[in-house]
Image (tube, rainbow over the protein chains, first blue to last red):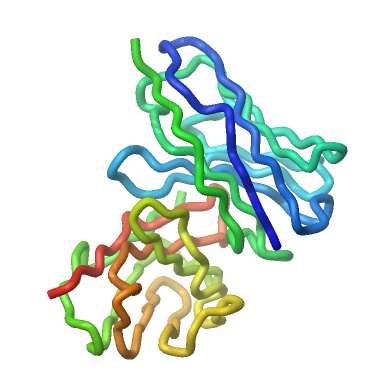
Length: 119
Length: 107
């Protein structure tokens, strides 16, 4: 069965960096685009970034452009989110999701990893 | 970016009743709209995609309709597990955007 497991969250000071991982299993990883979405405590969903199935196309929300980088490792079936210059407003649970093939909708989601940016 | 506005913010109903949730887009998204349900402490689950298609394993009590800028999610007869937060999402234009959510609570 499809599984997505995020890791790498934690408490970090403003201005520092963190790298999140999303380990995927149960499907052909190279066939699907992968996304990151975040949810601040008690708030709604905010889309963050996407990487295409072949890794050639990457897009970002304006709120993270220039600070976050999405990448993927096909040998490890893992997608990453490198987060630099973190701000308190980046505090959230970060979920990855697998696209429904051919659509930019999430048909499988991970449970998320909490990132807290605080001094 | 396309803004999705969901209404009402909170809907109070009883099990067995019919629920109607709305999502309005700031510009046309054609039929490129999905609905998700998020239970407390869980990840969202895809219910409806491209406005009216039920996702795999989603029961028939869930239906979606609409196109352009106005969309509706209908739950024909509420089950206990349906009391949760619902989000709409558009994929018509980048960036992908979500509505702010509708909380469906037990009356």
